[in-house]
Length: 137
Figure 1: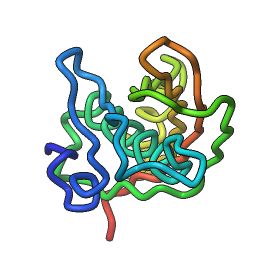
Figure 2: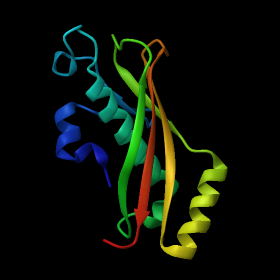
Figure 3: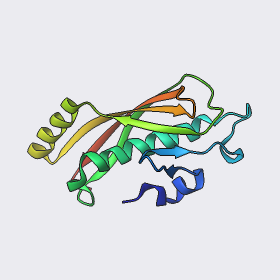
Figure 4: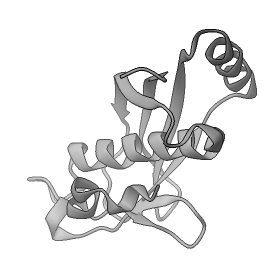
């Protein structure tokens, strides 16, 4: 699944970069009243990157489960005045715990942390995205 083909993601302008990460170019279409990248655009980038991390971590579940974002928390640290890139991470122990619970119950939760950085490697925001994944609709 190519997340950048989702209509909303296309509309925002999120793109897959050559390094494999998701990025959002600095452009007028995503700016706020301060001429920095809007908080909602940063959130969209980070949330999309968290979902892509699930695809990377659990490729055997693609098309077989329903991932739903349960909740999230976003902290904005610095204004984004340049293009931004999302860097998602999940600790190995969280992946192991997810796999154990999912194999027993057919459903499990996992958290993905995403750091958003600008072209100068300055952190503009950090988000935690808590996903619930189930084989049931």
